[in-house]
Image (tube, rainbow, N blue to C red; front, side, top):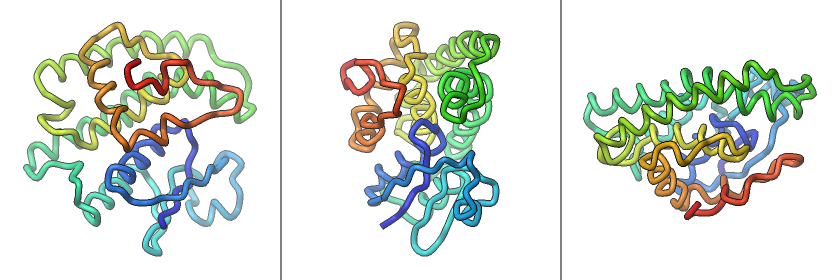
Length: 221
């Protein structure tokens, strides 16, 4: 069985969890307080970051590298297209959410509202929270534009790009920071993706001290 060292509200961990579940790879989840820099964990990943996946006698870190490895070793069902141009678009969008969206939105909402309290690093910075709340509007509008031209974010089939986006938005939805009424296309897309069996464990997550809103696990919102 695979073993994933993770944090429930980490979008990077959730992206890997979704990939594992979609490919029906049984996985044991081990919650890791990576910020405490436990020596045993540092031996698994000296960068002191999650996720870390232990599978087939290999220990792997960095969510993008893990997901690419899973795609190569467990190609069914595919989360990357065969066409090089389409694969480029998937990778572009994965980077968009894991870099740009994370920097402009996730780090300013989720990390300020939740991570600081869990890590005992003080109170939320209201300037960051306001910046994140403003930035997410642009990203939702961009997603709506993509979905006006495609069935899924990167094309006609669901790909790792959808999982990357859903991983971030699901974390923000847990703390009620997504305005699902802003763009109907995005709401419909998220309803489709969170109804997949791969999403079940994510919708069951519970973080002590941070109860999710009633709609969080509701497949029909």
